[in-house]
Length: 466
Image (cartoon, rainbow, N blue to C red):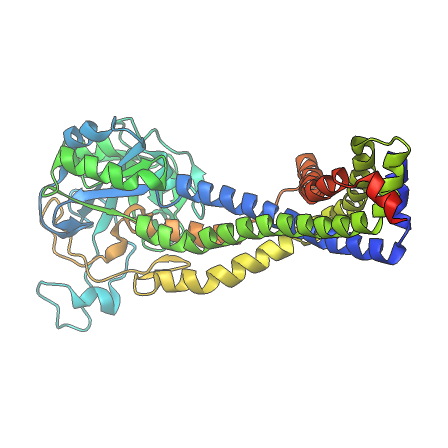
């Protein structure tokens, strides 16, 4: 009966070919939507666990070198390190020194028109006067601050951020301005510092800076236990709000300012969420469409062969045997359609996914970042920052004072923008199994009602009718 059912597809070749083509498109679309759903879901999970999951804590009323307030202390930060869902806490400390004041360095920064606007001492109105711009020093507790995309160590080696050794890494600009290389020494806060390495941070301002272990900077600058910024990495963007609430409860919302890029990231991935939902609904719709096609064909086939079914029953064929004939016929059509559908799915999955993502995200992403000072290249420098350094230096050095601080939101934005271009489907052996499973689901759903019709055919009525 099974072999007979397989041969039945040749009874009407034109109709069988049409059914196979329709089923192949249906199964191919189902496979494309399944692959798209899987790829987008994995991308969203990846973004939530690696981008936009950072919280930045700064002293209340200050940002970088701007504003006032009291610094955060290591004691305060230690209180939140063991809170649930916190993966890592990175601490930074900022300081500035004027060239020649407690150091023997030359500043590589030229004040220019922008710098002169904010100079507040004698010589401001002298067009030939060129003030010396303070040098920014950043104390770090984690080497991730000076590693990553766009950053490269040009010579020497990184230091251990958790040490209190008098070593530091200097930007390429300050190295060239002072003829320094790895292994050389310079004076900072009347302390001899050894150059561990020379680094290219990717921006002119960051390459004008000096990077030390945070405990070293605390000791030599007289800022023991002080922290300028604490960056909290949360295990997922979905837990950011709860962690912020816990931090406010621990440290007091009046003592700290908390910022995060959660809202920006959530807005940016909203189009992906929409595409994921569309993929899921299309997947379900494709399976239902294929099942309905088989259902209608099998109902029509059962009615056409009602006399044949009655005769088979009259000579002793069971309902199960006759059912197997029709199921094997529908399964044969569906398997052939599935083979073609899998080929279609494999060939078109990535192009369709790419089209969906590009169409749905381009406008949404750009509108999400309008008015935020954020571009695909990171955070655009904002207004002036007047540092309140160790000696009360008054000078504008721009919001790029710390590459680490200014890149927190911008890095997330850049990662999101680039990650949208990196979504692709993965096809493996299991995907082929999913295609066969889709064919089986379509066959089973499409054969239920025809099986019931077969069981109701009465041989006696057929014979009487003849």
